[in-house]
Image (tube, rainbow, N blue to C red; front, top):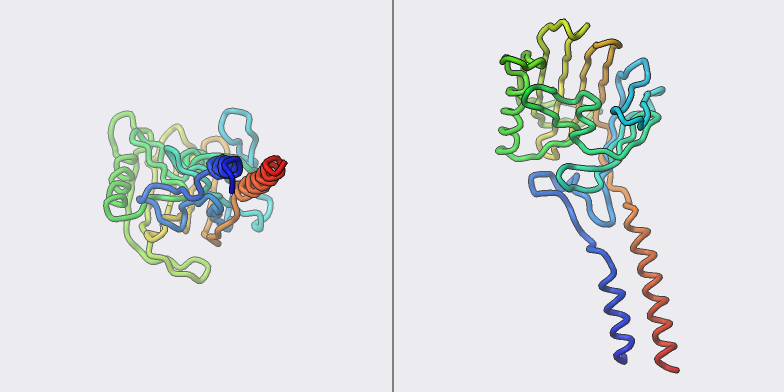
Length: 250
């Protein structure tokens, strides 16, 4: 192989992105994305709001689960400062982070110390202990904490769709308040092996009743869009190499 072919080959190989990446070791390998694959987590919707629910305050749209079959899914695609990916809930799809979807779907407690575990939590004794401390701090009965209430946590075994999970469970009941028709009540159970939410049941009424009850349905690896990008890069590289060979022969 002459110097021209070698140079072209090196350029093509150098243009290919890194093939493997993932989240910090605090998160389970089951949810860590790779270059060729992402993780799609799916939940069945047991109960959901009867009216459409606005997503944020930026005019992105609203979501509504019309049929139980629509359900909820979150595809874990990357980790920067937080888990990021694509949420599909009922008729609505949005790119979001784990913390933002926890706020939007009320999967946590917006106390003076925020507690928003969302769909996926870090695993390991140290992380679970820290999460537990944050949960109790979020509901602490202190001045200016409008989310004060009763927070309990425990380790328990839950059977969901015929599968038994060892879970850490958070049970939160907000104190009565003039700001709410019905104060918040949330029950969140996470598999301590994968960190994935296996059961979430949360409700609150400010103007309209809001209830979301979901249970884990499946965890699957799905192809990422990077597979297509790699295919294009490889084909393009082959074409460039072939052109270089033809030119060098001339």
